[in-house]
Image 1 (spheres, rainbow, N blue to C red):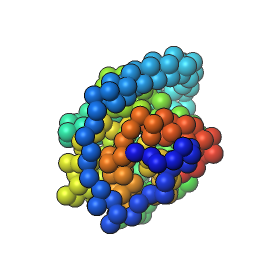
Image 2 (cartoon, rainbow, N blue to C red):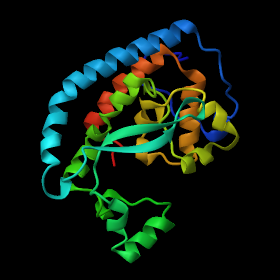
Image 3 (cartoon, one colour):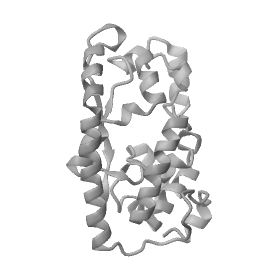
Image 4 (cartoon, rainbow, N blue to C red):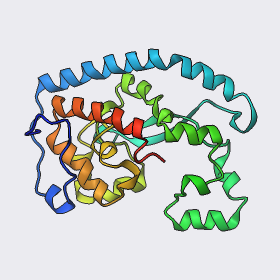
Length: 231
């Protein structure tokens, strides 16, 4: 629970500090309020985003963008349940095969934990770079929120390799719904890597409240406008 009325969040705790925190009982009122906020926010957001869906659908009929509008990937949700997360596709179709055409770059991609900087990744389209830089590629996750797989606020859903980073804290991390935005996003996002990210995400799990959720949503708007931590 926050102990200040400021809209600024506390600095991310170090891993050692986070390990001393513990899960607290979650009230039914909080869960009802959070779900209500999710449904309202997702419906409102999807209505506002409808023109974006239509424009992108047209743009995805031409050039390097040609192909499916949405990209989907399996992620771990609450209690370890796998679900499909949706994003606007930001890469060319058959991206993995496209990258393998450059053996040296693909070798670096594997050695670098299957990651490339946006400016060196030939798979990302020009439109895709814009969508990522503005975080608009995340908009389709409002569908996940409406379906109940995700919440507006929570730890980011992870793939299997990332889940291993949580080690013995894995079950605590999976005890809450993943979110479109969360403590990690407003604390730096891609500039905060593992193991620091583990401490940041768990800090939200241990301190979740409706007030904290609202503050994170407000700060997310500021972070998106500043493009801080975008990739």
